[in-house]
Length: 79
Ligand SMILES: [Zn+2]
Image (cartoon, rainbow, N blue to C red):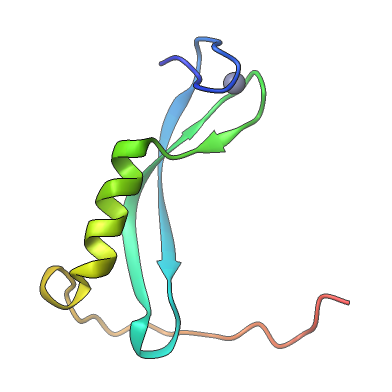
């Protein structure tokens, strides 16, 4: 597909998992289609994907399924 940033053909979609929010607002979304461009090395989600993510985050109680997951915090400071 075509890259929205540089216009080159050759952008590919990779499914990725991301988490949003924290604590009781935390929701993990699997299989998010992220576009990766081999020409400009940009990675981005489409407006349509962003809208869907927004929808999932707002409706996470009804759309989400409770799963047992291990959540670790990164302790070391970046500095
Ligand atoms: Zn590009």
